[in-house]
Image (cartoon, rainbow, N blue to C red; front, side):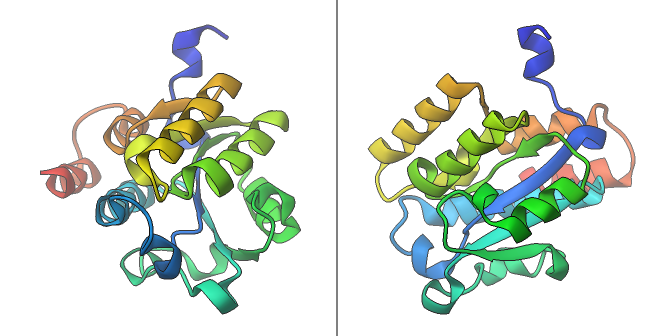
Length: 186
């Protein structure tokens, strides 16, 4: 596979694996409002393309549920609790991911340098391709976010953006779903 092929994703290949976008964690994350907004755009675009979605919640008894702005967009049966930093190391989450049959994982969430990075590294180790939308991940500090993005990219993940990855999945202009997505990004 050449670099161009490695950097492309289509709707029929994709799954979204949202990591720990929980209010109590978000409160401490740099630019968390933009992360929530961009993640909601990503989820809406992917749902319109029928891209499957799974999501994790790190210790929800103590850290709360996924932020309501995003939780309402997610299929309820697609969530899994976790205590491991890597969602891949939680059997229920990984089973849900495997059940989609998809090998190209779009990976938004928090924190970039901890749970997102560890999940990405485990996914890459298991033969998945990982696409990290840099505008839909975050950490408490910008420095830690950059460390996480750098680690994932060095390991083989594609660092991208919400618009880039969703436009790749659409592949062409036209249709109601595309027009609705365009309204979200204006």
